[in-house]
Structure formats: C-alpha cells, structure tokens
Image (tube, rainbow, N blue to C red; front, side, top):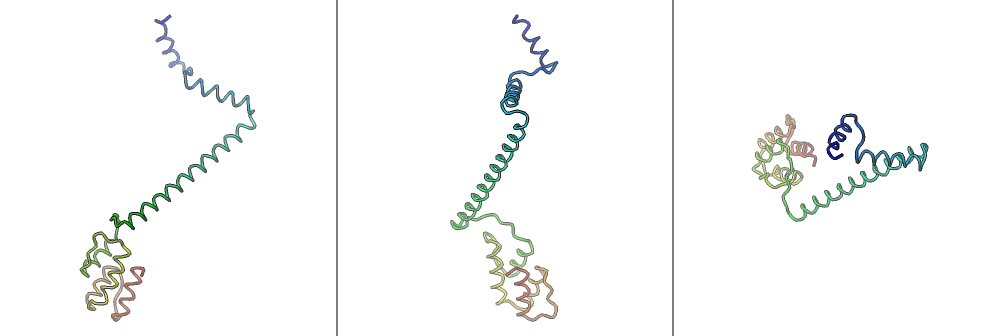
Length: 153
C-alpha cells in the first residue's frame, strides 16, 4: 500500500480534493453552521469584523501616541531630527548669513525675522524675492511685515 501513497497524493492534487488544513476549515464552517444556524452566522461575522476594526483603530492610535512621545523626547533631549526645510527659506537664511544646519523651521524663521532689523533695504528686498514677496513701493517696516507674513510669523 505504501507504494500507492504517491499516486493517491498526486490524484488529490489533480482532482482538487481537500487535504489537511482545508478539511479542518471546512469542518469548522460546517460545525458553526450546525451550532449557530444560517441566520446567526452573518451576525457573528459582522461582530468579528467590527471587533477587528476597533482593534486596528486602537493600534493606530497607540502608534500615533508613541510617535508623538518619541518626537517630544527627541526635541527635549536635544537630539537633532531631520526636518525638511523649504529651499526658499534656506536661500533667505543664507542671504542673511544664518546657519541652517540642525535648526527647526520655526526657529529658523524667527532668526530670519530678528536678522532683518539689522540689514539694509537692499538685503531686505533680496530676502523678499527669495520668499516670493513683492517689495515694490514698500518701506523698511512694511517690507519686514510682509516677510513676516510670508514666513507665517
């Protein structure tokens, strides 16, 4: 009989007869149908789907909170984070001779605003150009205000 087992296994695959795990799954489904009946089974499936959705939402919320805590801890510990700063902002900072390495965008914007007080009208107009601010007909104070608005400060 042992010499026929490869032939029997091959015939199962050829005819698509269930083996091992498939038989167990079929028995579980038949058992559930007998135990719960055809009307309760969809309710059970809905309940399981809702539970899985709640679980997934809870997991995403926990991951979000962990990310926020790690970001906050890195900020408080002085660890430098890689932050994407707009090229226009970098050009404006370079024009004012401000170092951009290791700075957060908000701090860089504040430093640009502080540096504008000490710069000439010509420098202000160059910085305004980098930031996309029109400087025609504006005096020093108005130009500084417009640059501050463009920076969101």
